[in-house]
Image (cartoon, rainbow, N blue to C red; front, side):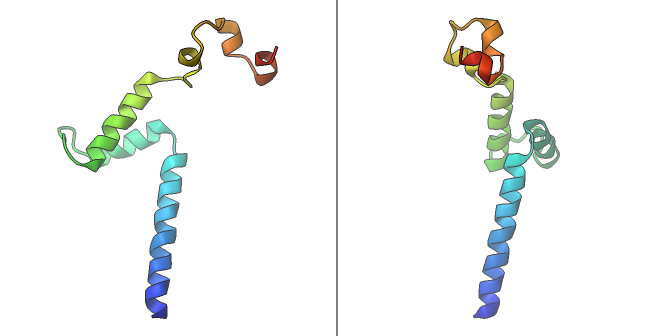
Length: 86
């Protein structure tokens, strides 16, 4: 029973490390990995869906601040926090 428990713990820790590394990796690097793993003509499957979603998010670009407040002047929307509080 202790061996089974050790195996389960190792699998869970490995999965959490892989997921953490994936989410902390920049989008460009994630796309690079998915381009190597998923065939270019793939239409189905979870990795193909992940690649499409990542590409869609990448093409939107920016932090979304411009969409959230379209009336804000451009020089203030790109400033630091102190400048934004004025």
